[in-house]
Length: 242
Image (cartoon, rainbow, N blue to C red; front, side):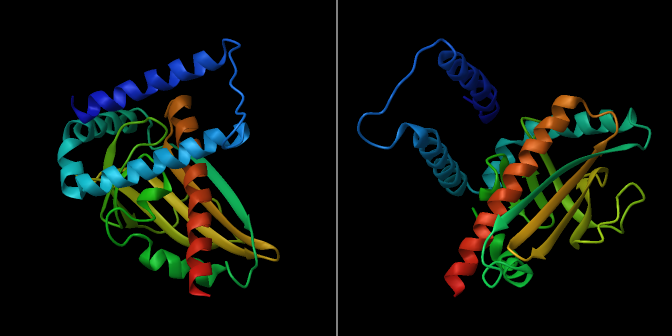
């Protein structure tokens, strides 16, 4: 079975699971991990397995396995761009860690970022299950909320006219997300800020203007998961340095 076949089966498996839960059937844990924590424990186990498998397969083989999916994604984005007439749609996520500002702050976050992408797998890859490869800034393979599996680079650009000012934030990156044929298929902004009771992070990705609602919702979910994980990983890194 090819990797693409496995990926296509996963949504069906998820749907079957959800439907089973809606039938009125319920399981109560009487001994073991509390019922309310079972789903979280399963999620953490799944994330560990994904990171392990990505590490065993390796970045080069991941790229080879996904070659067909990446080619299809290139076609998808070119078609979307051709119908968008230069318009862009913002998809945003923002999160805050309530933490001791002496531990998690702009300086400690930037220190985490300096090594977060080292090795394979790494903290950036662990930021979301749909990150297949993250060799910043020049080689990234991701899918966003079940969207096309895309290979691209992050290329620094000036703030674009369709991007808002962020006067209360420290903008850490403004980039074009660029296909391997040098086509900019989206843009992204990331920003951070120190707060009295913690630390905040902001992500925005700008999709072609006629992106379907499902693609927008999937990306919003993706960004939300990623920014919350980045806060957790940055805090973990900071506590290990103290």
